[in-house]
Length: 437
Ligand code: MN
Image (cartoon, rainbow, N blue to C red; front, top):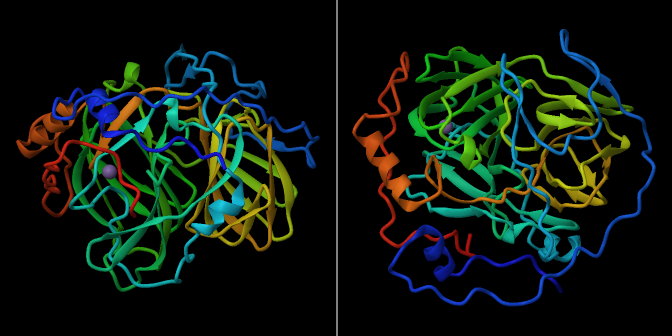
């Protein structure tokens, strides 16, 4: 069977990062596989209607313009680069093989002291992401099992990205799903101040709330289905905690969006958008978190053609969601049982869908909550380590050093505790995550 491109070789990674320890080796040969399969267009089973948030203009073309418009609050949109989907990447087998890798779904509610809104891993592995080598240019159904990551003493999150053989979906570079956790008698989320570069963070809750503070002076409590969007740009630091008192249950996702090279040194900024546009169909409510879906556009600032949407599907609903054929997509299941293009996706799992789709069949066996993540394949290669998204090992070493010295990342005021120390850098040359989970 065809598989998507395996991990980069050590030599390729070394070449990417400019390391000298590993001599460059031959690049993998082989002719590109054309994107042969293309699904026949099927008329939508339902017609979607849009509800706009007050004050937004109404006429939005259903088709995304070819040149991405960078949306910044209060500013004039600027044209960005337009990256067509790369041809010549390999597809994968269908859902059958992917399902073999499926692991147990959520084990149910449990008490937790949660630190899920950041990469708190004390020995984080670096990961090389981006580039078109990982993109699947045709529709696939590739079920991604979560990597269970322990944060602190009693908390476990399910990491979906980066994953085995799948590091990004569009510019989405990091996805953790956590909860629902019963934190009634617990402190809940407690993430001390820590730094970020080169990314945006998206806080997305289904239950509970998170108090965000950052070095730009922002202080904001974020509730369920409200967008907390932090753009790190060149440098930011922030803390996240469960407010006191707080709701009994905490359930959400922590996501990162990689910034493209042209904008990754922009000014740090935090945005709070409690009102987001929705797209509805019988049994479906889709909230547009970031980017656009079926012509409805999130007010959140974006730097690449992207979409993030929260989908709530009633039991028995059967709909087809319109997609952009030149985006790649994935679905993160959070609750209930949804069948995505015929594949059951249980909470805590993600189904990667590849590119080349104009719509997506969705059917709910029970009331289901899930997220659609997509975007134009991210062409630039990245290296991620701890809370940094960079282009070279030197940048990461510098960012770590700046944080350790108390420089560059500002100060988070009001957090009751000490900042998070940076973990030690790995001694081995930076390399992508191995095949063993
Ligand atoms: Mn963070």
